[in-house]
Amino acid sequence: MKKIILFVMLSLVIVGCQKKEEPKASPEYPAGTLRTQDTLRIAEDAVKTDPKNVNAWVELGNILMDSRRFGEAVGAYQKALELDPKNVDVRVDMGTCYRNSGKPDMAMREYKKALEINPNHLLAHMNLGVVYAYDLKDKAQAIKEFEKYLQLAPNARNAEQVKQQIEKLKASR
Image (tube, rainbow, N blue to C red):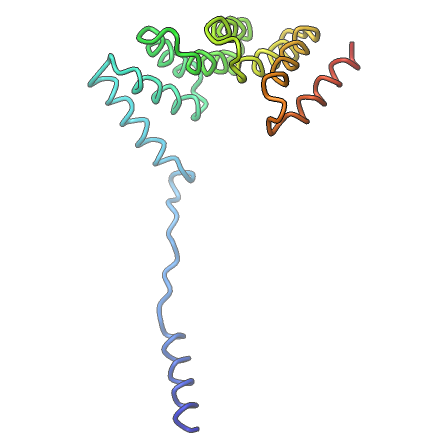
């Protein structure tokens, strides 16, 4: 019994004496900033090295968009579209950057171009509905786009919110 008590006490002393290292946060940068800076630098290097690499331009645009550098993202997306003008996803992302830059007319133009290429592109319909509803105050067109979205994706995760939005728009006419 004495051996067990001695063992337990010795174990507690050893555990208590072990130095626990706390993870050190870098005070100079918010969380994720270094990673973003690294990925941005890598993407910028990739487009300098191979300016005809569509994927590099798209990735650069995505990183800039995620960093809320919308004007710069538009430039990268334009380069990508010069190389691949039928890339609907890039066109929709560029439209979103235009909208976030306060240019809803340019956003609408890009969403419509995307829908010319792919009339069933969900995000193009959704985003076009948002521009109509909130920027252009065209409730009828917004409802039309939201309804098209629901027609294409009746079981979408946000279907209930879209239905509620349609009802709000109809009620406020």
